[in-house]
Structures are given as C-alpha cells and as structure tokens.
Length: 320
Image 1: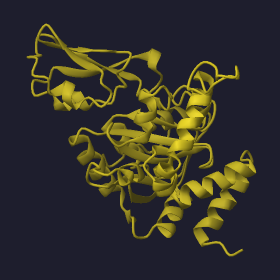
Image 2: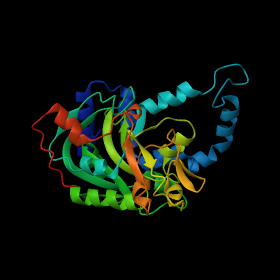
Image 3: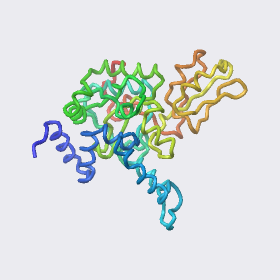
C-alpha cells in the first residue's frame, strides 16, 4: 500500500511511541483522515447518523445512559462516560496561555502532566516543529446547519499532525505562521469563544490542536453538558466585584458554560460550573470580573512556567 508522506510520518511517530495499540493506530488515522465524517457522526449531524436514528433510539431504550437495561444488564453510566473522556479531552486556557502555546520557539517534550491534564491517558505535550501550524475549518461548526462563523478556527500544532492535515485536507485548511495563529486566538476571544488544548489517545496520546469553541457548535462542550467530563478547568475561577457590577447581564449572555446568573441586581458566579476561561473578564464593561487561581481545579496550562520548571535556561521570549 502506498501512503502519503505525511501518513508515513504519522505511522513512524506512532511506532516510536511504543504505547499505541493497533486499534489506536487505525483510530488515529481515521480521525485525522476523515475528521468531518468522524465528528459529524459523533454529533448526530451526518446523514448516516440520521438514517440510523431508529436503531439508535432502540439501543438507548434497551441500554439507557444510567442504571440498568430492561433485562437487568448494566447501562452506559458514569464509568462509561468517564472512560471515554480519558481518551479524548480538552484543557480550558485563557487567551494569553493559548497564545503562548502557539508561540513556542523550539521542540519540547513534557510527559505525564496529570496535575495539568487530569486524565489517566493522553496527557503529554510533545512538540516537533512547533512553528508548523495549520488552521483547519472546524469539523464541529462544519457539521451544523447554521454554524458560528468563521469556520477556519481550529489550530493544528506541530508535526506529524500539521503535515497530515494539510496533505489530506488541502481545500479546508492552510499553513499559517505563529503570528497569525495568535491573531486567530485573539479574534475568537473577542467573539466570546473558549480556547481548548485538545489531547487524544489515538493522536499519539498527546496534545495536537487548539480549538476555539462555542457552546452551540462544539461537540466537547455538548458532551460536557450531558455528563461526559471531557473538559478540564483552566485552574482558575471567575470572581466578581459586587461594588463594580451594575447587573447589566452582558457577562451572563457571554458565558459559554452557563456559570453566571443575576441575583439581587448583581452577577453571581457558580464556581462549580465555571471553567475559568476568562471570557467574562473582557466582556464586562465595568471591569468587575477577574480570574482567581483555584488550586483545587488543577494547574493552568502555562507552557512558559512548565518549561521553566523543567529547564531554567528555557527561552520564554514568546511573541504574545
């Protein structure tokens, strides 16, 4: 079988990884080669999924999301949802930390970041050619009938991922520089969207992309709302100064996680729901919000701090 050069590089990297099963290898290839089909089916938006809806409804009745099926067999409960999240998940980041991650100026390798990425699998940051960045039309937005725009907001970072996506989806992506990647992040932040660094077991068990997500289109945020713990907090929570808040409600309208509400004419933060994205901080016209470090929510994905802890001579002069 003749593989494209980028596919060979992906397979070679997987072989060096040593921890990938044959299933994970095939899974990763399918995920990268046909992401629009993969995500469309997962979201229930693909025509194949719609055609199979009667079967899906029957399966859901027979094997409900929680509890037991009619025949007494266990259903797809919390354990199953958690197991799925262990293989595919995102870390919420502020726009500043996301910009640092796309501005790395040398290869790096950080393994077993459980305190930052609180999952048993897929928690490494290994950047080969970190300056190789591709912006891809978002598969989640592309699957929707009325998506948020623009579509080209998913950043594929480093090799072999950038080359694989570029070679297999030339009509839906393009190579960009680190400066433009930062500009895309900043533009999405101004639109009120959330930055997630995504990790996947089948993508060599590590970080491969930054997605800029809205709750109406994003499959991961949809899964989170339905009890699949796919997203990890930034390590911060929003805090509001009641003296500055005028109760205008702009923060509540912009919160992608539904963590803000009005009470007695003031904004209140549901800290359990808040993921510390920081959208409200810049949306508040009165400057009433700030992000407060919350150690119980994990460590931030601050690549400068992580690398400085590993290597004191790390060059942290990023273009952010």
